[in-house]
Amino acid sequence: MTIPPSTYLGGAEWLRRGLGAAALLGTLVIASGTGTSLAMGAAAVPAVHSEGKMPPLTGASRWLNSPALTPGSLRGKVVLVDFWTYSCINCLRAMPYVRAWHERYKDHGLVVIGVHAPEFEFEKSADNVRRAIADLKINYPVALDNDYAIWEAFGNQVWPAHYFIDAEGRIRRHHYGEGEYDESEQTLRQLLTEAGNLNLPAPVSKKLKATGVEAAADDAHQASPETYVGYQRAENFVSPGGYLHDRPKLYATPEQLRRNQWGLTGEWTARKDVAVLGAAPGSITFRFLARDLHLVLGPGAKGKSIRYRVRIDGAPPARDRGVDVDAQGNGVIREQRLYQLIRQSGEVTERTFTIEFLDGGVEAYSFTFG
Image (cartoon, rainbow, N blue to C red; front, side, top):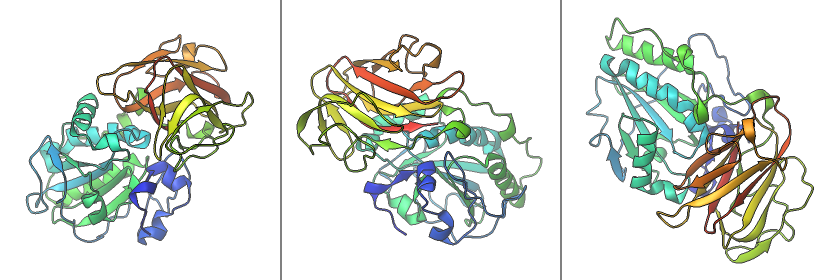
């Protein structure tokens, strides 16, 4: 099954919508995330078998943190290829483990390669990715796969996706989505041992305690799906009259929303993958059930700052604020990225979220939850 770039989904959302990895590739997949687990026959030690040779790494528009790498230059090394994109919450929650494996095993024969395959147009900017990898403290090589050349060479379909390659250049396992970090590290250790790297340091995955946006999702209380704001993939949008494509329109949001319904208020221009606010004020309201609420936002013009104010059930978030707002719900958009706006600190219940923008020009791309 081939999914064109316009319909690529983040790893957990891809799994949630039932596009089964096993049906896609016909190989063992141990996949988990904020959606349904597709683990099949998972054991304490994962199956490690050959899935063919590592394909070329050609077609990247640029490499960061390294010169361009090739399968030939990597011969004799164990390689972990991580497909990711910097506004993807599933990728961000897997990132602490990828970073830790790099640090733990880089002197024992492991090379980690991040293949940054963008979902949104702004993620094609080398400057944006360079800022993101600095913020995320990524020190390993990153290939900018803006044309999906490496993505397609691997036959990949999701974010995040991890491919485990032995010292002879064979893909020995892959994993889609979040989770199964212990098993993934066991695979790396097995491949490193096979390559003659003995006396490995102790495993690290069980010791990790990720925080902030990178903290593991609260799967038990999540009942809201990834939701796109642009009209091409928007679901549960209930502003009266629906979208007017590619032209400004004055929108309103109904007073009562059911779970996962949402709407725009103010003058917005809806495009395929984004909605852009004209003059302030303007707002977005979403009825959700999840511990965390994130929204991918951008300031529009480069160098511009856009102020916003968050409310949950009509009140400032206080202890339920995300890392990108203060207790009164105030925040500023200065770059295009994922913003964590709500993290419920107590009992997770169904709430109504509103973000009001105090300046015009904001770009709103997608909601994710956790």
